Image 1 (cartoon, rainbow, N blue to C red):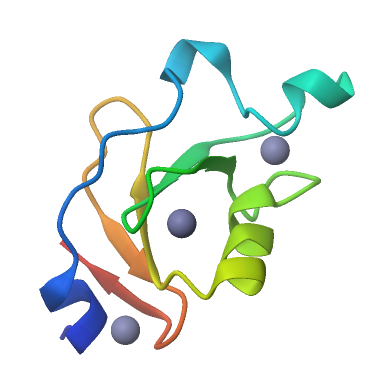
Image 2 (cartoon, protein in one colour; image 1 turned 90 degrees about the vertical axis):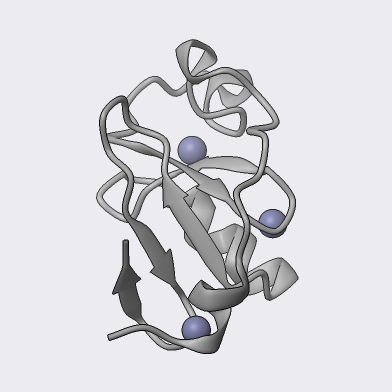
Amino acid sequence: MTCEHLEKATDAVPASPYQAGCPECVPAGFRDWVHLRVCLECGYVGCCDSSPRRHMSRHHEQTGHPVMRSYEPGEKWRWCFVDEVLGP
Ligand SMILES: [Zn+2]
Ligand SMILES: [Zn+2]
Ligand SMILES: [Zn+2]
């Protein structure tokens, strides 16, 4: 099962390296994110919904960008915020 956003989404170059952590949390002095995600529309890097500040969800709310993917080493899955569908 998939959706139009997942079908259309192409991969994006992450706007910051994984090792640098969440680019929203770090400048604010937080180091307690759980996982990192990448927006496939613009390359924005943010922390996941299991993290206290959920920057990737906030990015979707602010921009409407529909699809993100995992930025964790070895993980490839993608997620559509609009349809709440998990894709390969
Ligand atoms: Zn979708
Ligand atoms: Zn964050
Ligand atoms: Zn984006």
